Amino acid sequence: MNFDFNPNYERIELINYCLSNLLKYKTVFLKLKHDHFVIFFLTQFLFYICKLLIKKTHSIMKKLFLTAAAVFALTAVNAQDITFGAKVGVNLANADAGDFDTDAVTSFHIGVTAELPISDKFSVQPELLYSIQGASLTETITEDKYEYLYKLNFINLPIMAKYYVTQGLSLEAGPQIGFLVKAEVETDFTDSDDSSNNVSITTDSKDYYKSIDFGFNIGAGYKLESGLNFTLRYNLGLSNLSDTDHEDVSDDSEWKNRVLQLSVGYTF
Image (tube, rainbow, N blue to C red; front, side):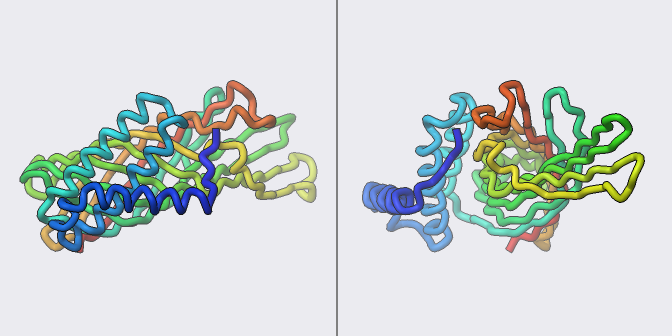
């Protein structure tokens, strides 16, 4: 089932949800500093999204992300030294596509981060990233070559638990939810007999995929005292993104994201 917003209804519902929780926890809210004020509303938005997902996702993935969201919310209220940052990096993206042997493609990601310390060793880091993912596939039929480049653009929200092994060096792991915003497939046909018949077309393929992706991340990072930091992360997609309810998608179709990310960031 696709995750589709009714723009008018969902906007009003989101405002009501945030305001009702603001009134409910007004005593805590009045004690928040400016940075905590921002995190408070980010938390409310996160829980609102989780609320909408309750009947739309697999129970294990839902519980995992809700648990991470709860830890984030508790940390946000109690954290003393919240730091914000930005990051950009390279994706080496591929997919588990069932019987199809796909190849990795190179793309990029960019976004913002917020690190909330729990202790000297532990912290929680939510991120908001725009990430271009996908894969490529080559088929040869009667000596004619078909090359497919799949591009899937996501807005990803990972919530990472970080453990500092030594000063600057950290290990991280945590769940991620992704929202598909665009999907295209570029098809290049090469005629083995007559090159004048070669064709290259790009088509919109968003309807063939589900709108929400759940995954799990694991990685490591290093942060310099200047604020410059580096991260190596692997994203294991847990959801089958193929929309098998679509009439043009077979029931046994599979697509699970596999993404290796190398990022450089800066903490303000």
